[in-house]
Image (tube, rainbow, N blue to C red; front, side, top):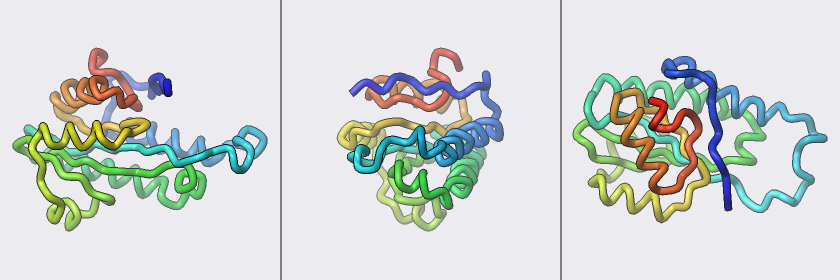
Length: 165
């Protein structure tokens, strides 16, 4: 399946502008007139979206990143079209480089989730066959290396490519 790349305006994207852009994307989907929606029964499954937040290099950027991802989630959680069309998964990169995968972004969930080494996390992402990635990382490696990782795994990015950053 070819998905292409979804581009969100803003170079470089400020964190607040990025959250607004992603929330706007999901809001536009929810406001699509019924005449533009696919006929009932033609959508065979929800799109699997991985939201990647955190920072391998900074506790500050990690906390800010997770906060913005939570804000985006709060902005779309009441939207029925979003619930019907998307299945959200969350990966949090922790300072030091370990990863955890959670079903929500609650602090308790992040703390309780098993911590994975970088290679284990890459294998887990590759095995899930995600339809798209929404990166919420604001540190330099998050803007570059982690976006490039998604490109290597052939998970389309919402936002700028690593080369633009």
